[in-house]
Image (cartoon, rainbow, N blue to C red; front, side, top):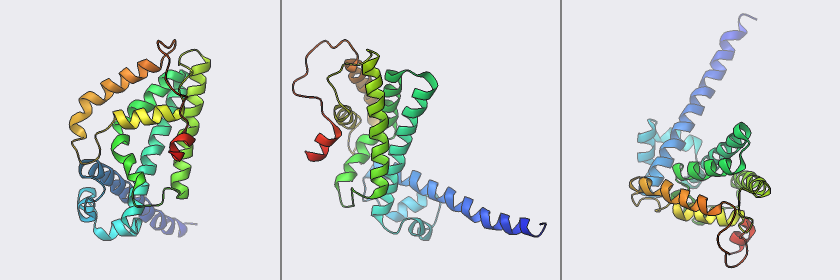
Length: 214
């Protein structure tokens, strides 16, 4: 038993180091994609992450894999923020507000256009992250409507379009300098979602399936 302990430590230590390196790479890539766009050199991402090029390519064999991981990590964190807010306070509209503002902090508006570019939008990892976001937001909106907190003539697709549009500009176009406007305008939008509604919206509530077919 005594001889097994050092072996176990040796086996687990590189895995922990590798996980930290991977997290640093994803964090650096998210920052640089936001600042400069998706074509930022991998060398620059490695430098900001404090790792070598070989470490980046060991974790992500190509740029598409890295972009995909960044998008998935952002969607996972926004989902977790909404789930945590709902679990802690039970306030559906408050959880929705939390999701919207965290999405802006995560640069959703800058990063999501990358989904329309070169890589596989139907990758299983992306599908799983997307479904998690859609399910939790659909549940929160349903609960907010049932509680009389939210107008009933909006859908998840309406919310996602507004968040993406209002939390822009796109990557590489001074995203950070626009922060002072983003949360203000998002809160104005959120206030417009509250019940009772003061106007009739044209058209029908937009679903995520509507967006996918557009």
